[in-house]
Image (cartoon, rainbow, N blue to C red):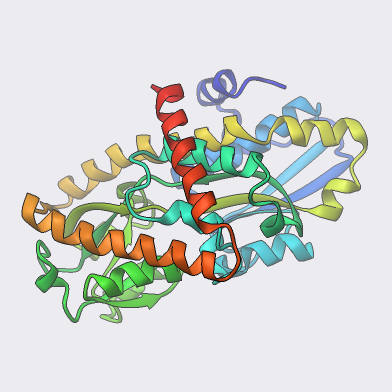
Length: 343
């Protein structure tokens, strides 16, 4: 395996991320689907980098074709597209399939971690522990991760109090985040991220929640000028592979897939969000956006709502016979471990 930390700078220097196909004829062709724009930082740092790592390590025996921007299936169908073989590999948000990954979505709970790298490290540790095996039994997981904490963005309404949120229609990425938005007094509206731009532009929603980096990736800064440094949620993501596509590989090519799975790629994704947040904030400022902040007293009010959402979600899992409390405890412990390991 080529070490990821060495691989990424080499790609950036040599221009290998241009998508040039290996010189040798491929034995295996894998279709990798995601919903980010082709020119997003994720395309370069996550998807194209993984493609190049696998193709290089296999000496061209594996070829990976990356399908961006929902060109091989809509975002909410990502996991099923991998499960059913529409794509060989898919990157998606677990919460787009409501109720299917209840333990994984513990990573979305407010205030669990402060950076994408730490959240991704903790999530991968939780997956590696076997605690989530039942949720992913239909596919071959390559790695899981989170994005950096997400914030609130509105078209033109300044939001600095709970009262300011009342009556606003806010896009929620998942049901769990929808509970948070509703608890804060707004009306949650479900839709995948690629639909945000037009929905704000047409007045279907008043705002949305995204990390700073994604505001830039989806050019949503063009339709939203007020931003609240909120940071109370993150999303869980998975990059996963069709089981048959994996099992049909010869042993040495399976090993290459395994080599390019797990913690290094999880942290690379999370750190990518942290790094891209800086660029996202710069673009918001350059485009005339205003970043607002909560007062200490107001933040305590919002935090009280977030704490209630966390308590209700964990209690709900326990009442369903799922190990909600235990999984949450383990997730918090892994966050602490990762904070130490990554600092």
